[in-house]
Length: 222
Picture 1 (cartoon, one colour):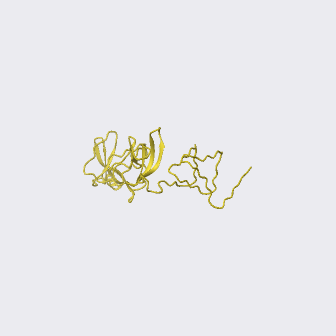
Picture 2 (cartoon, one colour; picture 1 turned 90 degrees about the horizontal axis):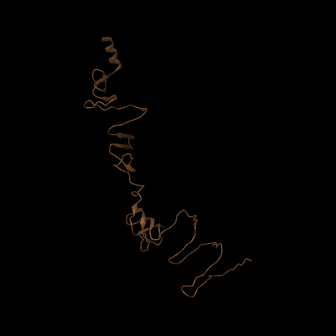
Picture 3 (spheres, helix red, strand yellow; picture 1 turned 180 degrees about the horizontal axis):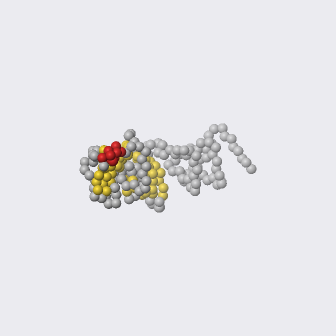
């Protein structure tokens, strides 16, 4: 049998003793309106908590003992915790795999430097690569976004075909490059009798590639 009470004004249920409790024994309790709980502790004993709000406000009073550090803790064991917190002293988010019940002990790592989310390696503009499981970068391999320039200092090894849609710039070399076994080395220098300024080194042979006009002249002469 349904029962409805209509109250004009506040409705109080008040216990007398400090350890008295109010029990409601039912399958479902529905609150059609706002629920305000005054107290220092609120326990929710449930296997699943479904919250529709996109944000959960923590440390809303900002006057608690640990107001500078607030976040979320989870039990690891009966006495150890892991957590995510915002450190207001350093203005950064941190994570910990071993902290206490108040989230103010143990080791806390900044998210940008924690394991699995390290900061970029090398100097600014350095391209990142996997160096034994961590990010690394070198000044010899950089990308300049302003000029759309990829800079490589050292040896560039390509396995397979290389397709270039645009001009190739070969800087003049001050000396003849060393020979590389089973490899033809191309390099640039001041144009000589071949008229191209493009030279090659293949084993002990070093010479200049000949331009079309020079080849015609040589063909007439010889």
